[in-house]
Image (tube, rainbow, N blue to C red):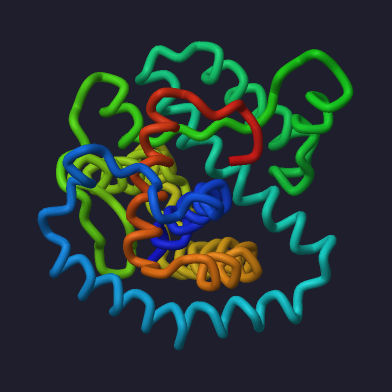
Length: 255
């Protein structure tokens, strides 16, 4: 569930770009690589049920009780934690520009930005020629950059749209890089019991899930209204989004 919202958010970003051409998006001559479509549709419907009955109502409650300034601070904090994942994968990809920018973001925002509560790095980028804008890198992209094929499209229970390659990438990021789920704290700070306790990780992960889901309430309504077949729309958008990220077609910004 932790990664479900993260990937759904990425898909919805791409969905906005595809609203005007939903009927033809991303299909090549052979169609999308979706041999598991019957099973995927069943899992997709299950995820939609969970989202409609649990995640969406909880996200609306979160949005209702959270003042906008505090919501911005929470978003900055989780973005700073995600920069650890971006840094690790940038290094693995030998993408030194992204690694330097992400490392600088972590240092600046963690120190001067009060543990990431204030996004000082983005303010520096806006006021100067120094590009410290946020990047988007994960282990699925790292594998793709080294030529590993995505494999069939698959919808994972709770985790949402994925592929065989990206499913493996989620596992690697979660267990070795993501500070919230396990990541660097579990590998390099495993003797610090408090940082690795369920009593800390669970509420932090829940808060991240609710915060991210809340950011896409209005966007999802637009997608629901625009898509004749939401499953196909989400699938095609996800595939195009991943191709774009692996090819580094996106400009560095808040992704």
